[in-house]
Image (cartoon, rainbow, N blue to C red; front, side, top):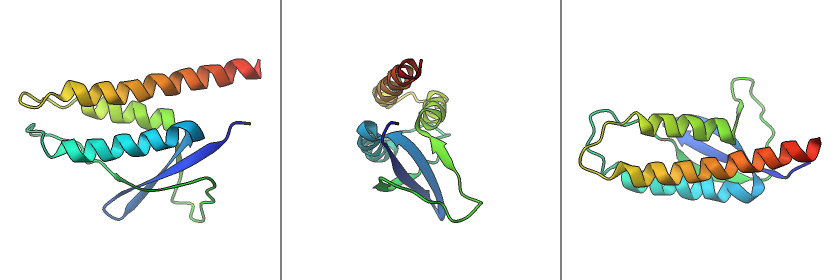
Length: 119
């Protein structure tokens, strides 16, 4: 069974828990920090709200039924869709999308390899 880590994200008072393969959790946290650094430079009228990575942990037990764990690939797909929808003319948004898509490709490959090992 693969080792997973959890990246805890916060937007206002809401928490989001993203389950990532242990070797990729840091990449999600680093990507999140980079996106936060660059998102203020966007000039588009509609920029998605981006939660901030606040913690990582190896084990997570949720105690409230209102919280749930989001799979890392599902989170990256949603993040890519949100940033793809931005209509930006001044800032080179393609560099941010490239970083998002690079992590997406790595996760897709990781999940494919895991599925092959189960066969």
